[in-house]
Structures are given as structure tokens and as C-alpha cells.
Amino acid sequence: MKKSALPDPFEQARVERGYGEINDQGDPVTMLLRLKDVRKCAHNWKTFQSGAAPGRIVVPSEVDIRETRQIPFELDPPMHGKYRALVEPWFRRPLETEYQEKLSQQINDIVDEVLTTDSVEVVEEFSLKLQSRALTLLLNIPYEEAETWISWGTHVFRSEDDPLDGEKAAILYDYIDEQIDQVLENPGDDLYSVLLASEVEGKKLTREEVKGVMILTFAGGRDTVINAVTNSVAYFAEHPESLQYLRNKPEMIGKAVEELIRYFAPLTHMGRVVTGDTEVCGHAVKADSRVSLCWASANRDAAAFENPNEIVLDRKVNPHVSFGFSHHNCLGATHARQILKTLLAVLSEKVESINILDYQENIEEWGEFRRKVGYDSITVKFSARV
Image (cartoon, rainbow, N blue to C red; front, top):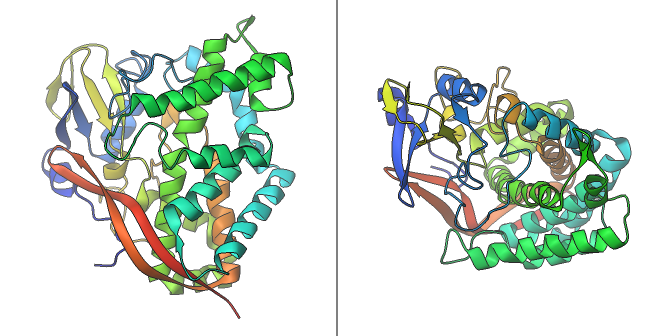
């Protein structure tokens, strides 16, 4: 099996019963594994709510490390839609030509940089830099601010020995508080300023609401983009013919991005809290218990995907749920897609080959399931096209 492969640990349970069970810090979770069940529950917000205690729908739960509600992520309709309508135009800016040109320049610069080195550790020295620099465009703040975020490392809520590190999370919270203070004194044209000047139902957003949007913006797209970029680099290292394919057919880059996102599923799952006694996959779940929508399993469901465990760059039918589903689809999906489209275009244009020199896999453990989500580290050599 190739180093870049991500096996599907959910297949047997998905086929035989459709669900799995895990214990998350004493708060049990029923994992939904089939695409049809994941989509059905994601759509049914009245039974499977997002607006529970802040941090509880995240798996692992973040209730012990934050009290701020992430907006609009931890809201249900109709308020979810009102807050989302407020911020969605901002998060669609990656479709603008000027934004794409700046992003292209950023990614060209970082690829040019690694092409001059004998080796690069992709997670810290490539993907984290790329993600952080691109985030300055999304927030519309100075490029230099990315150095601060890079200094935090790849995870904002997790340290080397602790999957949920409250002290590390406080670094992000304190940083956002400081930025809000600065913008209150000197407003600009960045996302903080836009939020502080915005209204929902005739009322200005509170400081806590602004902080909730900003925490989501920083945390929601960090590990996921880093995983997607790193896994894609590993894939092209072992499949140079795929780089050649995109070089010959750049019009297929959009489909290739969707397929890489489907296969790698940068986020394993996301939770909901059950509002009343109900049943999923023939399994009884009680009110106030938790379920998780397992995107990674749903994306490998053979009932929906032909050859689900293979990367098919020109896959024609691809109803993947890596960006969520229904009203809670990922707010940052446009930004993430544009990053990956630009990266694939630059790699196919400038890189002849990528050689994996060393790697350490990142394995998540969810009860009976052990899922490789990517790498804790992977060192490669990029070779330029002549």
C-alpha cells in the first residue's frame, strides 16, 4: 500500500450496522457512517441540533476549553440563516479576480521557495505557511500577521501531549480579544471591522458574537486545510502521472480538487445533540445524547461512490460531504477550494516530481476505529520542471 493511501476503517461497521459508538470524555457519541443517514440527519436540525452548549457538537468535545459560541456554526435555523447571510458575502470573496491573483502569487512564492531546497517538512514548513498566509487574504489584514499564526504551530486547541489544551486555546482567544480592542479604536476594512459594524435583526453584533465568528474562522479552517494540502502533496509524490494529467488537462483541476477532498476528508466528523428520543440506523438514541456525522465514512460509501477507495481525478458523480451538508455546509469552503485549485495549478506547472524522504502518520482513535487523517510530519524533496 502506498504511503499516501488513507484506508477506510469504517467499512465493515458501515455495511453491517451503519453506526459506531465511542466515548468522548464521558459523553457518549453514536457515529453515523452511511452517506444517506449523514445527509438526512444533517438536514434535520429540529431533531439533531447544533445550538447546544458551546463546544458540545465538536468531537472531541470542547466544552471544557471554551464558553464562546462559534457563529454561525453553533446555531440552528432561523438564527443560523440570519447570521450566515451576514457573513457569507465576505466568505465568497475568493471568487473575485483580485483575491485569486494575490493567492496565486502567495502560492507561487512558497512553491518557488521549496524548489530551491534539498528537503522540506511539508506540515510545518509548507502547509502551515500556505494556510496562514492565505488566511490574511480571507481576513483582509496585513500579510505579515501570518508569522504570528505560524508561530502557534499546526493546532490551535491541541498540544503535543494533549488533544484538548485549554492553555493553548487561550492563546487564540486572547489574541482575538486584542485584535477586537485594536479595531474598536481604529476600524479598518478587515473582517473584524466589518463584523463590529454589522447588525442582525436591527441589533449590532456583540463583542462575544464577533469573537465567536473569529474563533470559527481561525480554528475551522486550520487543521483541515493543512491536512488537505499535506495529503495532496503526498499523493502527487506517489502519483507523478496525476501531475502530468493535470498539466495536460488543466480544465480537470476543479474535479480533481473535489476528489482529493472526498478521499482525504480532512475532518473526520462533526456532532449534533439529539433534541428528543429517536432512532438512527435502527439504534435508539436518547434525548440530549450526541451523534456524529462521519464525513470520512460517508465519503467511502460504496452505495454512492463507484470504487470509493480509489482516487479518480475525473470522477463524474461526486456527492461528497467533506464540506458538510445542508444549511451547515462549510462557510470557508470557497476559500479552501480556491487554495487547492491554485496549488494544483502551480504544482502541475512547476514541479516535475516529489520524493518522500521520511514521514510519521497522524492516526486518530475513535473507539474501535483507527483512522489515518494525514501526517504529523512528512519530509519531501520537490524537483522543478526543466
